[in-house]
Every structure is written in structure tokens, then in C-alpha cells.
Image (cartoon, rainbow, N blue to C red):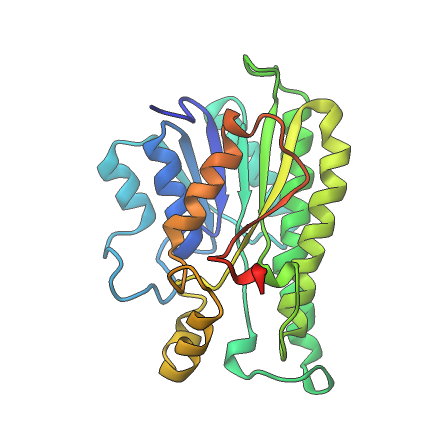
Length: 268
């Protein structure tokens, strides 16, 4: 059954990792896909991944899809991302604000040594980028005719288990993801009268290009796996299935939540 038939979805950060998995799954369920990233080529993708780009995979599937280059920390580019989507497909039903960075694996540092420019850059991408996605997507969705169930749109933000708790030497990333959770809850209240859902997903440690540096260290990988009681590390497809649920009419009475998809990490 196609759960997103004929709906149009923007997925930021779609060239690799979680964004790629979400784009491909949404396409399998009938959505028109707008891939967005700084470039079409993946960034240090996991070695077992397909050699095809996300757009090439979508083309192989016969999905209707376009790629739009976008720096999500730039308001003009995000506004154009939404505008071009509507010009191409007529409306915007779903946005997944997935684009994000994690600088800490390069040189984990306690707060007193944490570089200020890292903090600024992390918040610009991970929090401001999500804010801009919410801002311009909701503005578009408000003016659209509702679907058969009365809803006008679905906004899904990628937070983290570190948006619900903390960890050492991660001042920028953890702060940004807590900010995503606050933004999600506030935007959900703003958007609810217009029948626009705003939710977040809080992944546990998931195998992707972002975490590859960490998992290349066997002792660290084993330690992190042990923190996830249900089969260790997550896979991008685990997060994609949660996004599909939150983007579908199955979540008709859900807004303002942060859904942990974490193999039990949060139960500690």
C-alpha cells in the first residue's frame, strides 16, 4: 500500500545517510521527492552502500524527483527550495529537516576547550537550518487546500537522543539538538490551528557517514553498541520507517513530539 501517494516531500541532507534512506522509502510509497543537499554526491558514505547517488537510485525506481542545491543555514536558499518545489509540483505536503553536522568526532573537547566557531557553525546548520525549514514550509502549507483528512502538511525535524539527554564533550551538537526539540514543540502549537503536524525524530547512534569516524574505533563502537540494548547500532532504514509513520495519515492525532528511535538507549 502506498502511504504517501502523490504527496510531495522535501528531504534536506538527502545525499547520504538518514536523508538518503528517507528519500528512497518515501518514493517507494508514492511520494514525489525533492532531494536537497550541498551536492548530489554522498559525503563519505558507508562502504557497503550503493555506488549510485540518491537521485540515480530514485531514477532507477521510476520515481518523480528533482535535486535542488541548498545551504539550509541560508534563508534565501531555503525560501527558494520551497518556492521551486511548489513551482515544480504544485504544493508541498512534507518536509524532513534532516541536514545536520557533527564536528565533535574530529576532536572531542570539554566545554572549556570547545571552539566557539564550532558552536556557531553547528547551531547555524542543526538549529537555524531546521528553523528556516519550519518557517518557509509552514508558510506555504498554511495557504494550501487541505487533504481529504483535513491536514495541510507534515513537518519532521531530525533531533537526536542527545536532544533528550546529554553526553560529554559535545556542547555544540547536544545544544543544537535540544534546540530542535524546543523549536518542534513551539512550532507545533503555532501550526496546529492550520492542521500542520510538526514532530521530531530522536535517533540513537545510527550507522551513517556522520558516525563513521566514531565507529572506526572498535573499542568505542563496542561501548556505544552496549548502550543500545536492542540489537546495538541503528540503521538508516530504522529512522526512515519512523519518518514514514510521522509523514502519513497514521499519525493523524500526533504533533509536538520527539519520537525516540534508539534501540532502548533512552531507557537507561
